[in-house]
Length: 161
Image (cartoon, rainbow, N blue to C red; front, side, top):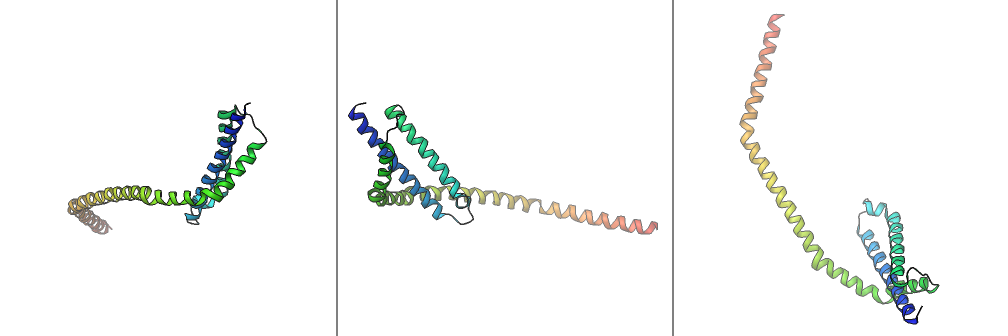
């Protein structure tokens, strides 16, 4: 194995460490932002374990792509170095970009989705109100006929006794 391949695999493992730091920081932010009764908060431990497993599989996939799956002793050191590099240097810029994306992209999309949902809900409510208004005389008529027949049957039943 050449020195160039080793260097690029080292950079790839540092990159997977940085990626793991970003993903775990994102997951921690999501858990902290959830309600205490939410599914994510209740199952946070198991979801975090699942995320670590997926990150491990992804790291091994990177190893397969870079070095045909050959594992060297410096790979875990490079990954831990990537995690520490994320915590030391990339933590604040990534958080800033995340907040910026949340404010500029995700919240307007969520607002549009909610607006469409509420519009459809109001339209259906309006249709139901119009149908209720149209059918209310018939419903009252059926109820009054039912009460009349019920009272008529009682009178006839009481006369027979």
